[in-house]
Image (cartoon, rainbow, N blue to C red; front, top):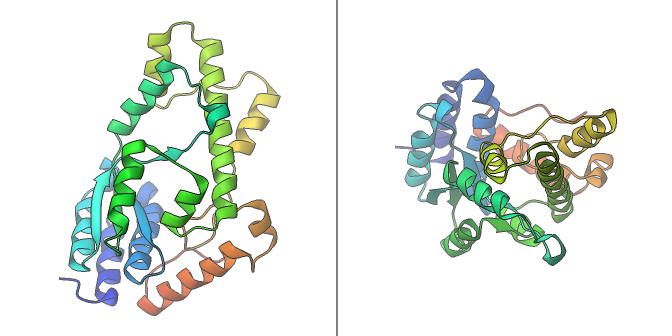
Length: 243
């Protein structure tokens, strides 16, 4: 039984070390996010539970239970689309629903009042910038940039599929599998690379916005230091701080 944060940190580090190498860094970060929830630093954690993580999902859930955290498995949510962007083709809407049905994540929280909000967000499948920032404890500026990139990438993917695949059933199958046709020009490649580009804040799951990249003392940098301090206090492995 993990009765203290230090014991939980040791358990989570051990579990992450047994994950396949290409998933190990993500599992280690997920473990720190769980510890941040338990320490009151993060309202809600979203932990990946891919099949190739072995016993990590069950082990993480056991640690959450032992720390008296609320938790539930569910699909990942997506950025919300405003009224101007809401007209998605039906084949894509059903493909996203199918993709979410095949996904696994573990949501964890310490405050019981957050359970209903997590369940509502998962049921809707999409969250606003303000909602995600509040639930995950991320700087709103960073979430706003992440949402903008994610929605633009979604639009680019839909356009590529429509352009290259004439049949809606085939479009559905590609989108449900998360497959996007390759760009056809250098300009399209540059656009795709720009939309996929991220600048992670070390020891967090935050993708820093341009302002936080430019200012190490910005909201992401300040939060990152708190995460790294927690990891040091618990002797938990973390990624190196940004230069």
